[in-house]
Structures are given as structure tokens and as C-alpha cells.
Length: 476
View (cartoon, rainbow, N blue to C red):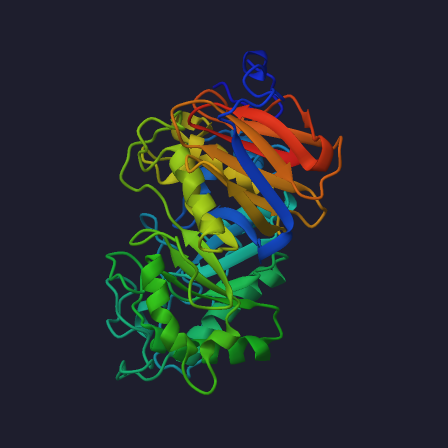
């Protein structure tokens, strides 16, 4: 397999003439960046390896050790690959590991909510624990552990699958009693097992797509019912002494998560006050507007779940799995919805679909153009960065920009048109002579480093962006 690495100069000379500090024609697109007007703080980018997908990385289907290291470096190493800083774990609720089930740490029903639980810990967690260890070694900063469902015996339908509610939330009593405290203890114990084994869980979630009664693990909830549990979980975390933040509620679409907010914000002691990040998915509705909260918001899951794997297409016809499509999704989410984090569904897996960023079929590592689109953001926009004001004079040339904590400014330009464009960029406050490093991703190139450009007076520089391409300009 031939893999394009970040600093590879393969075919670079053919592109230098297209991205250059040329004189400005009359049709030049103007782009302005103002670092003094700042918006949300960035927490990072990432993906999940839940439902035993972590095992795919560790050779479940024969991936050799050298390629296991390659995919880990591509996902989490900032210098070599995308430098993802968020991993979303699945907290299991199954009493077996058949199919792609995730094991519960309490597989045996204790009988009643107040009975002593019988927790188990295998230091493996469906492959997610060793993955977290390896990711932290490569720069991971956030481990979001999220439960799709409580164990079945804690739910109204006595099943981890097919919906059902947590026993004890508003309007959902159970003959066996109120299981909210037992579920809170369960989640905190999961984090404690990780902590005691040397890996820190930073954020806890207790729902996944609570509007959808899936045939797999899942649990229903509205905003009021989620608020019921948030109060119990917050008190349990405080008592535990663990440093854990609460995320809620991973609605199946952005509109669905918006609809849960009134319940979370109601009452004299609003549950929203105990939540660190409001989390939603992009399936039923995309993140195109800010949620009605002053809390951070994260897009925690989205993917093309219908298409066959298309690794080499950045743009063809605007299909749901193409790289340009996902570059646009990320840019709109960060710029228009004000999200602080953006996570794809699966990072890497052995599959024939677009559900992952990297495919591991035939024991090879095959990054998609979606992966490189993610890397255009995640590699240069690091946790702690602030989104800053950016404007483009051409609707086909969309822009976003971020100022990192170390002062480095990364500006992403997407040419979503069928003609090359000349651009004239001004980054406010940038001194003359500062090197601007461009990186391009399109149908031909994967995050290729181009010839540097030096800023002129007042932070001006000029360049050209090919049709249907993404270029990040990093002021170093």
C-alpha cells in the first residue's frame, strides 16, 4: 500500500505553480481574518472505537503489528497524523461479548437497587482500554466515556436493547424500584476502574440518541428525565472524589438535542448547571445553528452510514461520504453552530462502508479523504484554540480561522466551486515577513505541505486555490 504522509513531497512540483504569491487579478477573492474578535474555545476533534471496533485496530481481523502502529499514529500523533485529542468510549451494558456487544462491568443483576453490586474489570473493555492507553501516549487529552444504555435490569423494558427507560425517572416507575442511584454508581465505577488502572476518564455520558428505540443498546429519555438523572450523577461524582465532567445527551440530531434543553434548564436547581458540554449528533438534523445554552456544545457522532467505502474521493458530486462534504460539515459546525468539538462515528475499522475515517480491509491501512479533511482541522487547531472572525467575499470560497494558545493562526479555506480562484488574505495584526505554511487536500493530494508564503505589510498575502480543494494556511 502506498500512503501519502504529511511531509511527503510527492508530486509537489506540479502543484507549486497553482498555489503561489501571484499578483492579484480583478476577480480575486478577498479574505479577512480578525484575531481580536474571538468566539468559542476548541476542545478538540476525534472519533469512537466503540462496539469492539478498537479490536479491529489491535488485529481482530489480522492487521499486522506494523500497521497497528501506523493507524494509531495516524489517528493520535500530532506530528505524523491527525493528532486527534478526543476518544469517545462506549460504556457497555451487555453480559456477553458476542457479535459486537460491549461487556458490562456489572453483568449480574443484584436483584434490587440497594443490593451490593458485583462489579468486574478485565483491563480490556472490548479493546477500548488498551486503545486509550496508546492514544494517551500519543497526545490524547479527553476521554469521553458514554453509555448507550443502562444494564437491562435497570430499565423499564428489562432489556439493554429496544429502547426502554431508566427505572425511576419521571413517569417511569418499575416494580423492582428506582435504579437511578445504582446507575450513577455504575458509571462512576467504570471511571474508577480506568483511573485505578492508570487511564483517566475526563467526561461521563449516560445516554446515546435517547429519541431512538434501537434494536441494539439504547435508552429513551426526554429532557426532564435526563435532568432527573443528572442531579443524581452530579452528587455521586462529587462524593466519589473523581475529577469527572458530565456530558448530555447525545441527541440523534441537533434539533433533537435542542428539544431536550428546556427540561435540562427547568426548575430552581437546573440540571444544566451540572453539565460541562451539551452533546448532539448530526444524523436527523445537522449542527448549523447554536444550541440554546451558554454551555459548550460538542458534535459527538456523525457519519455516512449508507455508502460503500470511498477512500479516494475528496469531491465528485457532493456525496455524503466525500472529503469536501465533511470538511464543510466541520467548518459549518464550528463556525455557524459554535461547537467546541467534532467527532466522527468510527476512527478505523474493518468495513466496506463509509462508517469509518480509516479502513482496515485486507490487513492494510487505507485513510479516506474524510480523514484528511478532519486532519486539516485537528492537526492545526489544537485544544485551547479560539475561533476568530473570518470573512470571504465569495460564497463558493468558505473560510474559518482559529488562534491557538501559542499564537499560531490556522485558517481553512474551502473552494467549493469548479474553477481555480485567486485569493487575497489579510490576517489582522500579523507582521510583515511571517511565514505562512499552506497544506492542501483534494482528489490528488492528502494534506500536502506546499511552498511557504511570506506575509507582506499588514498581514497580507496572496495565493491560488484549485477547484474543489481545501487549503489550510498556518501562520507559523
